[in-house]
Length: 187
Length: 96
Image (cartoon, rainbow over all chains, first blue to last red; front, side):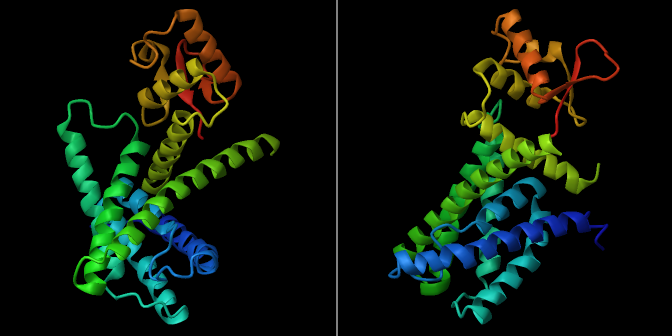
């Protein structure tokens, strides 16, 4: 079955570890800081949601398989938030967040493919555009899930948190790669 | 190379391109252009020929001495590797 779908364990482990680590940093560091400095903001969204970056990168590189790889860790983290941290997240939240990323990737890749030389000179710019579209769609989807209508606070909160998460994640990765290059000179 | 390693090297390339494009690396402008052209022209094994870079839009307009100086400096910084068999003009992009 796994072979038929061309799924492999190593990719699953890398994606899951990335998602769980980024979620842990968000819930263990960003959310407590958010509670201190912006206690009026709803706790259902984070001002810097790093896992959004992992979702975008996974689906960008792995396509629809990225959704399958992300689903278990997404629901694991959903369960820790709902049952461990008493955050009122709807059960459809992980599915909605993953689906909008796939829609955004397809939209941008279709548009980029329709251009003669591609719409973007570098893939990181394409990734940021995907992240921006996905974050707005995620905001709208969650607003509908919670309120059955447009709740602008949720839309703006989810969109800005997801986008900030993607940018911060890419800069963290740059920092890690620079550190790795520096350390490898000493080993 | 396994699928996971292939995707990780694509991710490393994306991050490295971002670092160079945003000017966060300590490379000179010709070095950045040559390196970005090398990343774009390299095949699945990371190998490329210098003539591919000379015709690449990023480095085509560069003066030959500037181009080869940048190439040499990138080699000294271990960002580009000369083919160990000394095959003329054949380089590979170092794993970032």
